[in-house]
Image (tube, rainbow, N blue to C red; front, top):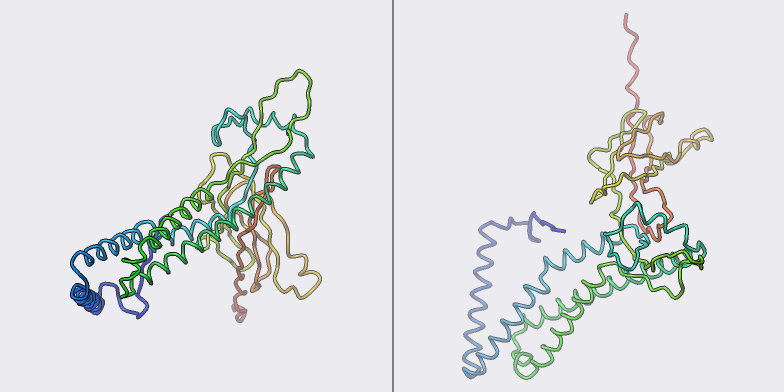
Length: 323
């Protein structure tokens, strides 16, 4: 996911303004003056080692832990928190994504329902642990970036000379955290202690493995969803549209109903498309809409649902009757 950040800097100045270039020149001049002072205080060989190690640290921060990369990591974790998680049943010789939809559904007739429900509970626990672990690993990367930034900005040369081994160990630790973070981003295989398939005599059933898979969140289109006087036109989308059409459930309710009759202004509507018009609403009132996929047999965990509040338009004022 690519994020483009545009706008103003914290001081409210344009990034390409003249003051920005002046500040950059002043910073470069200050850094050059600091380096000149450092050369005078250190022996040439010591200064060379100090400069090389600073450059190595700067290169690590601009590549493996760059602010842009960390922003993308944060965006991906937030996206995973909004995804829905499902169980995929795969024969052992197939990889995730290679299954034939005309063949695999027949496998469910051999699955023990109670064992499958137990595995769904295992999937919920594993998904929660995985999302929590992603947050903790990302926090370690943020903290490591701030720690190394402070070290790079410090005028003290001792960490780069006498304590360089500790710095190298810190870089290795953060590289390992990055590898763990990237590996945890991909939902993995569920660990099963028992066979899902009961004994079926001589029938040959392939060995089945369970995988956790994600489906992108369903999100309202805020620009295309519009409220009118007594009806609303709703649009929603999925980031990666699946090849097979999906079924959705659209829920709506009137906020702050005043009478018993107004309490009936709610409902659940099954929709087989990404658009729907809800009619017979009250004018000048606020309604809350929620969209989600129809809950399937393989759904394990769905921590987030998108909701949207729209206010219908008031009735036009009644003018004098025409002559």
